[in-house]
Length: 289
Length: 289
Image 1 (tube, each protein chain N blue to C red):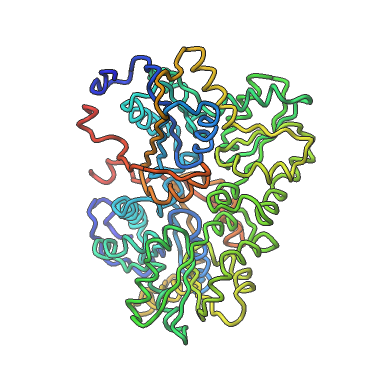
Image 2: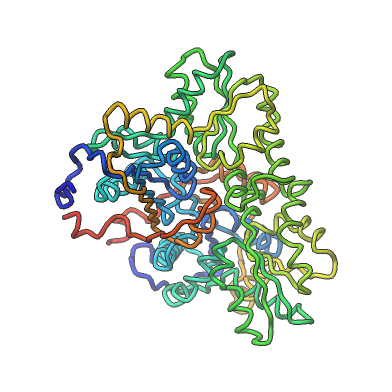
């Protein structure tokens, strides 16, 4: 165990290869990212923090989102993570640079892996992005994609009903299909050949979305792309877990563990043994503020 | 004009009859209450505050909801309101007692008028309540109804998709109908004869809900009942507006006036001339904190 729990500062040393992968999201959606990480790297330990008391981040000011992101990161660093995944589109768009500067472990957001995969995938350079109102209005994906390929044309469409549909568990069936048709018809007609699922909830609707947009459009699942990026960083940095014990999965929320369990088990496709409620920001004394 | 703007305290004198009716909500839903107040009392001046920067209240702690409610009230009192309407279910359930104790003007929430109307309406004492997850989980309506009539049986059902449906403007048509059938079928079969629309967004779906539950169930619209309660208090207290000028309608939000305008005009059925963004809590100096 590293001996840095009490330093109270922002700069930490590089995590040890046997530490867990840390993931935070404003709530529950980041579990799709966890799911893909577990699929690709089943032996790795993971620790997930859902900031359910302060969700949604998309309606907060940049200053507030950065503050929350730093506090969540601080908590995960106290738990000795070796790599940080920001599994929240808003936090990825707004706080990634700050987190990279102030955190001594590699930091990966969900935005760039999805944008890069879209640019690799498209043949006609017409890319669609769907997300929450806040994500689409922020133009974060649009900017990320154009910064990689200035010739790309990006069409963003907000799909506000998708998140409540997923949280309700209505991911297939007639209602999900009708809502998807309503949101995606115009996008389909616009001639895009690639569509980024720009919200961590949306992979849960992948089947329905695929059915509605048809085979001519490639779906980019940011959760899958983020997991691939995590694997690359672990490999490059020699940070793969060495111990041979069975993987530990820890879950923390800042509010309402029971709702998190109910919805979260649907996301993961299996039970969650233990969800602990924590207070964030951490008690003042511990951080010497 | 009263000369109490700078006293910095919580206790104010009773508003003058020519002051506006003040209404706050965590966001946009309270506009259904404003709409009914304007219908019933078209000459009265109104001032609406939507705390869009801190929405939703339903996921916050009681302490936080009370703090926000006091801050919103303080702002409205600075604007010389003669009566306060808490057009937010969460704030009505949690902070009404505190507001009544600390505010020198009459305070009316949306919860009690709806609960009272339901008890008056029901013949078989089986009452349904629909609302957001937070409202239903809080059992606030259930408790209010049973405190009026201990013999009443109350069945609560959360309808999380209704708010995004309304904000999207999809209040009729096939999707709204399918979602309503999904939520309300079981409730209809349970034998209730009265159904409380326990969320300020839901009056926008009244047509669809009515169609789905049929004529055998009376819908209680909390917005209508609240407006009736406001009229009674104004009449009883001699607080009806005396001036003969055309009514002033003021709108304030704590974030994103443009979204408020877009969705809000749909709620009101007409344009909103001016929406001002304000900072709440107010700058510290003004409140002498």
